[in-house]
Length: 330
Image 1 (tube, rainbow, N blue to C red):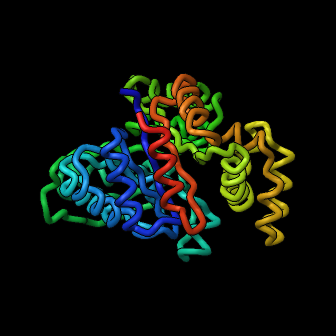
Image 2: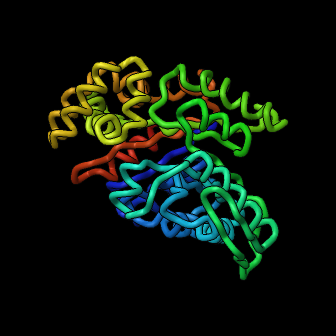
């Protein structure tokens, strides 16, 4: 069966996400991933998914290494792993300064070093049940784990879109998790992941290359494309890192214009500046048949696990998400 995952963020209630994950489990999806941000506690939602599903893998996409402490992340992941009977994948990421500092009141510094230290602390704590750490970004005198994890080694994926973090994925992680990918992204990412893997004496084939792919399905192709414009505008307008990513993907002028309009507070205007070509290059939008074909194109491009990221919205948001899940099912 062809590999495919599904991801969820804000817009749906926790109960609706659980319902959608149950559907994905029934339809044969390999994995379901839950973001956090402002959409509810991801580990709580994943625990609810764990006890109501049978086989689907459950992951975070992603857990911020700044807004949770490393031991807290380890405990949460181990708890979901217990309730899911070893189906947890821990997706970690550095998040963004524009979120971490103003939204959480936490200083954002040295994200690459912090990801290295966080991974080390989590793995040590799960393996040994106790950890002490003194690094450049994190210092822990002593932390004891007061329960025995069902697994001492939970797979860790790291979010990355640019070379240095992709190399860190190659060094440390079981997977590299991208977003807003083009059909060139997979092979380009593999080059950098391979560089990191060689440095650590690892094999490229042991590291999963995955990408969240914003997805909108409709019998009306224009309507499907229109649904993705606000999401693309948000990422290009609010996040400097993703603005750069979209610019480097061939949309430099568009990304600059979107960001300038977004920064003026005109979100609708920013969305209108997202061209069809940008949506089609960086996501999946169209009829059910077109979306399935697009998923396969990503799969053939070097992305081992395409993860559809359905966009809902409106009064029938859950139905739109479920339609996408059904349309792209393996």
